Length: 448
Image 1 (cartoon, rainbow, N blue to C red):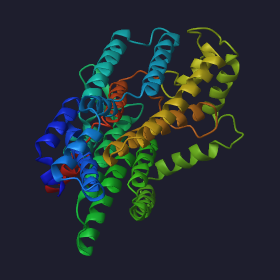
Image 2 (cartoon, one colour):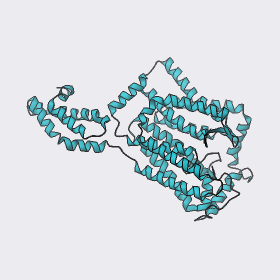
Image 3 (cartoon, rainbow, N blue to C red):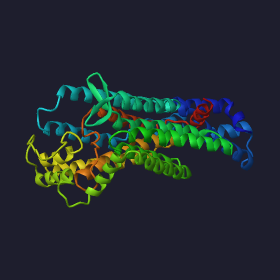
């Protein structure tokens, strides 16, 4: 007897149908039926061989031994129902509350509360929509997402709005988006899907493999590197490359990572050789970190002074600090500690560490490779930006123009909130993805 024949038996078919009727996640019904059939077949063969039972009697005995179909189905439904990572939700809620407090703690007169309210509402709506969406449908659009992102980046470089010397802003109505901050998230989501599709394809010939590697080096390294380096700073390139190399680690692409690193270094050297001003800027930022010259290291010294002056409870809400620059952007954390005190600053640091740790843990507990790479890849962008900003304000790492995600409510917040909902949505479906469905999904991606 085989599983196919056993599955057509009336007793077995009725039992499997009853069990699956209590499991709401329909995608896993085939997996459940296949697993139960395996146990039934093994039990039937044992009964026929060891207890010398007839086929019909052995099947009936095996079905009875599986337990009540309703109870089994209810137990399996509990195992395959949507899962919410409540620790990440709670940490996000804490960070959101801190962001609201920070908004009112900043000096008045420079903040458009109406715009901030629109940003928050749009971000929360995007977050809810992303949470309930099916992330697997995104994979087949990965190359389109990559191409559109690169295209918009180059369009912004040519026709975008220039702010603070950087032509990387795209205006949509009253909202202005910093493509330099937005693009690493979008590129990492796109490349996570591209690598997943490539992983599903059969191995090609050596020649085709070499051509594919060259094409990916151009797409993943050279094209983004060129547009990032044509902006005044290279920090967004560093953020993007960090997330990209994290994806390479997740997919085990160690050899490709070495080729990518070599291509990146070569490309940077060549481009900087034609842009002496940017090379001087990078060297200046790195060397002034260890300089005793107060003029050369002005911004970092003012940040540390503001934090030291904050004291336990701060200098008070909205108290001006004319010596501290960029309090609405990269130096916001330093001002918040100055205004609200060390306890508030410590809570922010703990919330950031908890968010990064629990989100990465959430990603590692996701079963399918695509979902895992999405969570870990996106979290790597959040993590490097959050931690670098805090360390930068504390005077531990060089000063670069990198903001504070989530806590700094800006137009980028809409995407950040949506990505948090997206990551939670991936984890939500981790026990609802059928192995057979996933294999079929990979096959359909390969064909398309």
